[in-house]
Length: 193
Image 1 (cartoon, rainbow, N blue to C red):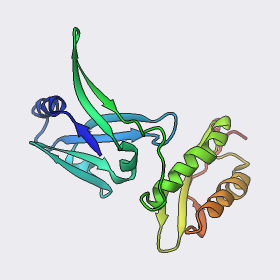
Image 2: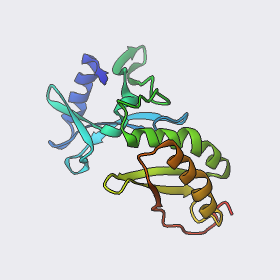
Image 3: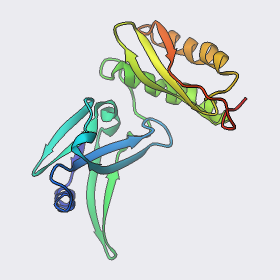
């Protein structure tokens, strides 16, 4: 999944030695599968560990990664590079912005998130909005989504939900039987209409 060089591991050990005992490392990607994807590394406190995290063991520390971004981290590398000015931590993740989703190896959540980012959000972003998958109610085959930005509180959201988002998700993912909008819509200056 992620290769962390020995130099980078030494650097993490050094940084963690200055933090409280239970502090570990988290690898994350903001907006995975989109052109605006950004990779990052942060401290992870014990109370920030989530059920959906995968725990990777290294010598004297752990790295936590949310299982939903694992496929975006294929062939990723973290290194500590030295130059004339000092050292810099580098994080290369060639599949962070887009990756090939394989029906048999990617989870339904991953495939729907990728679908929203590629098929729906580029259109919604023209109005300053976007939609994200919050979770899937497996028992009832319901995809719970949330609108933000210009879509939140927009007077056209009912049409956008039924005619664009719901219609396309149901047509592309037969496993999903219903879409539920979990957004607390509040009309304001941010709303497109």
